[in-house]
Length: 178
Image (cartoon, rainbow, N blue to C red; front, top):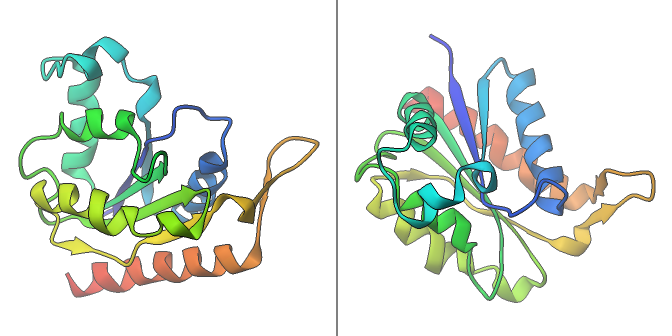
């Protein structure tokens, strides 16, 4: 049986440092033979997100990916000491126990180390309410560790890459145990 992963990207743009991490995670999964689906929340219909339209075909399609996934990566920038509002609007549209039996990896990119606990105190409780019981250690990356290159794209500092790769390797162990 194929392992499936979904990356929920709570950024408001594909042209952000979050995308550099998203691509790193996506490439890791692909090299591991994991089927990966990317949900760029900002590309979902805004009206459906804002009006909590559970009947939306686009929302239902994304929720189906979540239902079938083994691994869920929740990726967000930190704004105003919390994960993004656009991410919350999507999480609110997930069925009550949508994350039950899934392995969850929360990843955040923030302006300073001072926002590190936003994952623990803001995001993880919401994930738990959605049924998540297997949440790995969060990965928090300070945005200055992701350098925007003049020719386009990004370079990620080795220290951040090694912490990210350590948690991605843990995912494999968690899946074997479960």
